[in-house]
Amino acid sequence: MQPEFVPKLAAVLDAYFTQPDVMGLSRLYDVTVSTLYGPAVGWLAVARELTEQLDRGNTRETPIR
Image (cartoon, rainbow, N blue to C red; front, side, top):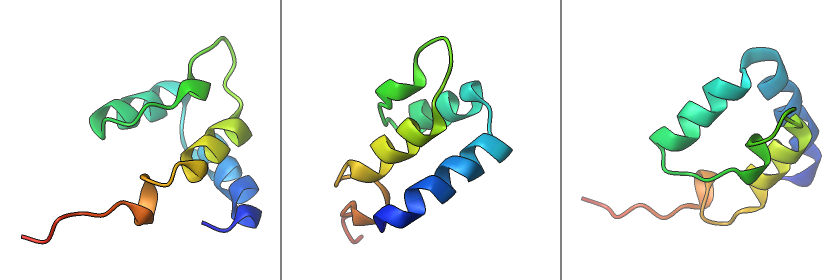
């Protein structure tokens, strides 16, 4: 993901998801997002953490079956 899209992802997360929603999704896909845990979630930090990890998103290599 290009860096200029991180604020847009943060806005989408804020508009459409709650903290428990994203925590559930991250557990479902076995992804640890450390910035989700705390008294108040910072969606920009969450979006940045999700996009900075190379093994997440569309860069993850999936074996062909």
